[in-house]
Image 1 (cartoon, rainbow, N blue to C red):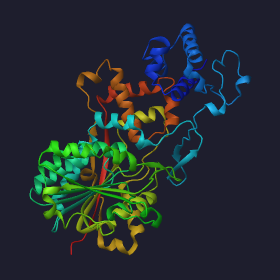
Image 2: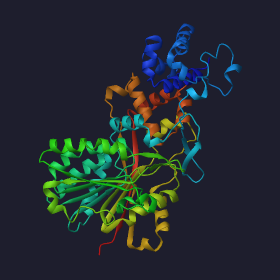
Image 3: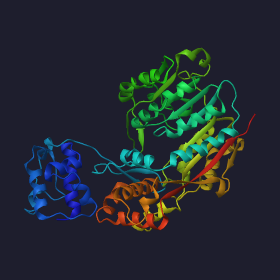
Length: 486
């Protein structure tokens, strides 16, 4: 029996039964690492395979699982393969899953509405969280963004900052610390855009300390689109009718007080911060939401800064666009949908810093050992700035476009490893972390990943690169768009 079919049957069973793969391994053969070893190329005996099949066939959860690995009717399967019978259609949960893939022109969309693989790269929580916790990109990117604070020229009543994709909040929190260091007594107006509920939770978890250190802060989190979020206004009349606008005036004077009140917002977030897959394969909000937070004891001071529904303005001093688009998208798409709207949101003297992956690094070497012709980084900062100029038309005359030299623009970040971890004997966890980081940065879709993990090639690729390079690192590149001062 092919390894891919075994893994497919187990995966289908676990999805239908609501069971983790490690739990399945323990229940079936008393081995929680069974599935991982099979996926990594490990062999199993006929006896073990028989125990797996017997468990799936005899366990009540199997009655809900469709565990055939081909499109043939069950009756046409060989007797040895048709271990678990197909239940009636009524017994199966109806789940619509979408796999995204690049379309001509670089945009992303659904390839098969009924696909078994629901892949959207930046919504894959396991890959994302493993990447941000094993690599220094967030640290290095936030340091690069903080350098721009020396070049902005805030005007009363506040320093105005927009984060065009807060992610887990690491870059934003570190930036706000740097802002406090540079402008310790100046009020802050900070707007963060994020469609992911999980990321909003992670971001809010970092904010109590920010409100304690810098009391004169207004923080707005929203799930609006790039062309809407800076102005906190929807373009659709229908969406405007369902706009959820919530103000939260934090009481107390300690980070603990603020944390308790922010944590109490979880039911509100769970109810309203919902997203679905749109026609182009990207996430769209079910309803627009804006969450406004500030300290109650500073409301009098912050009143001119606190945004009002339908009357918010952009005019930001700093716009942060760190990894706001898919690498494989076209320059025209990136400019029209993301960068140009953000450039329009700049105030006099404001600066937009864009950051994205560059490639040409050991991470890409690892990818090409498995997929020699893969090229996810087709557009450079020069291509994007050129496309933004064309998209803005006459408005571009008010802006300066700075690609800078490679020495200033390109920066490196590393995967956290000890020297002993990348010498003669490299542990499996290090190999997994390195591979995960490489496929995360290159935005490899799940379909290709599943094929690559069947024969162990990916572990060999990770091991070879780590040994040859003595570690793993990646390159990002940055660019700046600035508006002229009045």
